[in-house]
Length: 291
Image 1 (cartoon, rainbow, N blue to C red):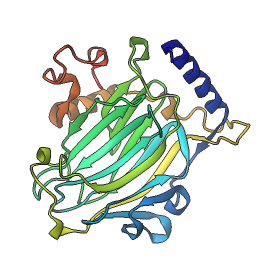
Image 2: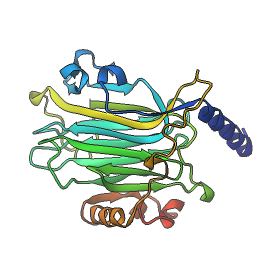
Image 3: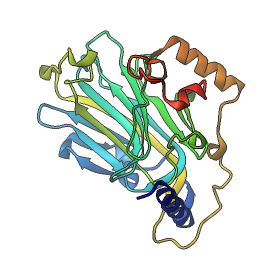
């Protein structure tokens, strides 16, 4: 398919999705109403009348869930309490993804570590099936001691990753410079807990200690203030049209906070990896201070 034809079809598809979009302001709801368990059987448990959800991992399987709805832009909040103690080899996730070839994806992944060593927060953005836009952080708190809120804001201008409402990363839309940006494929919310000891902890040097299994991560207070895609709907509600997320960026305070996070807590930035990109950094790396 010619590139011009591809973008023409993508635009037409995006318009058809927007027409079929039911714009909703979703309050924090029951996991029974919002989510489906996708794998792991009884390792995934909805608790407290639907208010909490726990995922477990043992040597036989991990577990996971996905949202019943698909969304095209919005703000997505989830409170998580990560696997405590020796979590080496484990990966806990909260992310958005479409399906099929050329998928889009926006990732929070939490890479476990041996007792006393910090978690690594791994972020990435995929568009049209291509990622390679990783940034990693260490946290300024113990993410296993209490629940903390992890947020993805996704609008047509940018993607913002926040932790306890502190921005840690912004990925701006640079389509004008030829950088693909997720904007036409609806995505579901996903979460999972799984074993990745071939790479997750210290480059795979530290393996999962199965004598500590089962490993458990806890989720609560999911909230999607977002455009919910309803393919069978012929109408569009404007109830949520002017929600702050649809144009959200960084104000002066937000820029100060993200500078602090990236200066003090960032441990990897693909835009600084000249070894990985010997022929030149990706285009977007020269155009945005905060990626």
